[in-house]
Length: 93
Image (cartoon, rainbow, N blue to C red; front, side, top):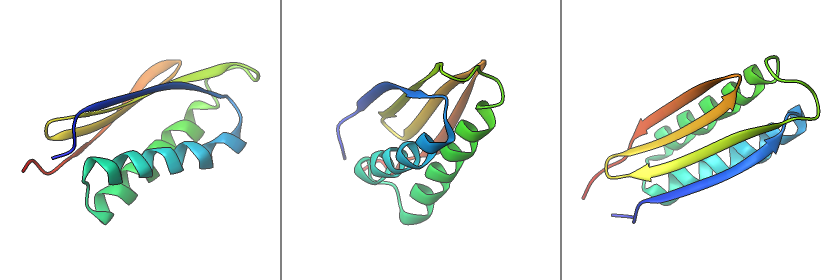
């Protein structure tokens, strides 16, 4: 089992940063031990939430992002106005 981790950062409220955030989410899911299907689903959901959140924030602001892995769960919280939480199961050895 992979040790728990927290990744915290901010991304500019700009659609150009959706792809790098998606790649980070996919890497986190892979590192956490998710299957290829769960990894793709998690990365797609993070990307979609980020793009949807762009309509809720002013241009030039930053969007806080937290990606966490705990025993049995991988989650991402994006704060684009109201926080959006995305979770996926992680295999526990």
